[in-house]
Picture (tube, helix red, strand yellow):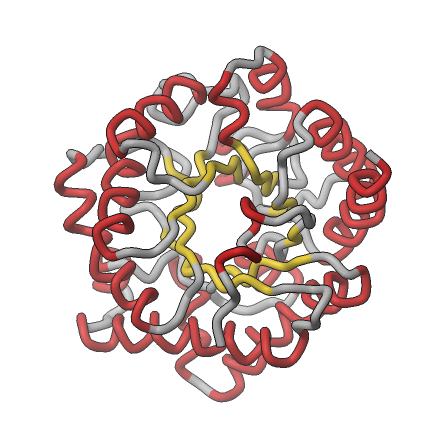
Length: 318
């Protein structure tokens, strides 16, 4: 199944929820070993697949019960060639894993989607590098070539859109967008920022969005921010500018710690779900065009439930 394009988040008047921090939840809350934070590897076994689907179900239920939309983001943040090689996957096995991930999301959509709760299936694209640091930055052309096959498989498998998350630099984000445009599938770019509101590469968030739009003729459906706490980027958004209107989604961390601190942490910092929800509501006050709200590192169904309670009714009232 596939949703109609007029039900994609940026073209809807509904709020769309997402899941929370899949890797941190599976590792710290479920005690599952995920080498290189690669949750897609659970699809290899029947038991692993069942655990993966069970992870998504509480979030899907929240959306269905509250009549919101839901973005089913595939567990494929690490399923690109460099990480797959470290995990022992051949190119063919990687293609099969990406297909299977979209198939799993289709199963969940069939189980939970209703006439008032549309589900959009998104193929999740992760960075070639770490996700917390810019590292060796590819050229735009290299990034396009690197990510194109995964995007192609997602498109062939029936994903409604692709979402590149924790993008740390402009060239890689631009390459993803160019590849998605050529393949013919809507693309979302989600940048991560440090505690100063800048990308790990040091670029201002607004400059990054404007640079990608300029290089792609505005082909990106919308932009998001993920893997950072609202305290890290709220002031940047408050500065305003036309570029802010291109941000239609937020997937924040539960913790206010920096990326470096999170990387070194041995225990999960789940923060305060209610406080996080209030911060989301403040963002929606200033940016009523935001349609996608969910979580990233350290968040679970408690955070998404609080965000839904605070923001969905809040949005309807507005």
